[in-house]
Amino acid sequence: ESFQNEEIGRLLSEDFVSVKVDREERPDVDKVYMTFVQATSSGGGWPMNVWLTPNLQPFVGGTYFPPEDGLTRVGFRTVLLRIREQWKQNKNTLLENSQRVTTALLARSEISVGDRQLPPSAATMNNRCFQQLDEGYDEEYGGFAEAPKFPTPVILSFLFSYWLSHRLTQDGSRAQQMALHTLKMMANGGIRDHVGQTASGTSLTLRRCSMTRHSSLWPIRRPSRSLAMNSTLIWPKASCSTWLGA
Image (tube, rainbow, N blue to C red; front, side, top):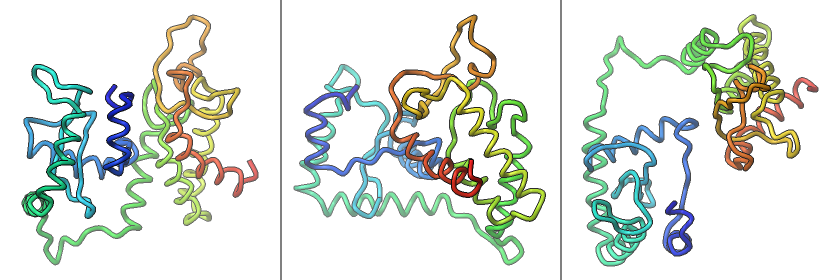
């Protein structure tokens, strides 16, 4: 809604560097800035909007902002104008406050680690991730959740990477099989754009008597294609074609 407003788009282009983060792809990034929003406002939620310093330290954050001011909510346009003004007039103060808040949040989230409680190695974490994915895998229709299913390129990329480092093991073969079968089910299901050869970014169960169970598990939500989703699917698809000749 706000991003369809031409004036808001102009303000963002002229005075800010806009970055869109998919919370399903980067829950780690989402958690960091959601913690800031929850600590500095009345609560958290999505959509989430956070303004950062060049060092990626947050100084303003919130959830939904309508395009214009309302009875109970400040408008997105007003927020942008206020931030622009404060950045020009009180930049040092904003930076100091941002550093102070960041330090306080880090102190709250610190975990004391003793000599006998060292963090697990990368190999151990990779094995744990693989085991969790293996336990939740849908043998028949692919993916790792019940319908409606959402594409998770980061998981497919992980499985191909895991296969590369465990090619001669049973777990490596299993990782390869899960990734390939999931891609195949996505390609055969309703989520795929059979004309443009791309995938829709989100999913919604369609209620049509003629639709098979397979296509309803990977259904299409809207005819428009998600550029962000398709860009993150490039690596898993290329891996499938390059390494396996698929």
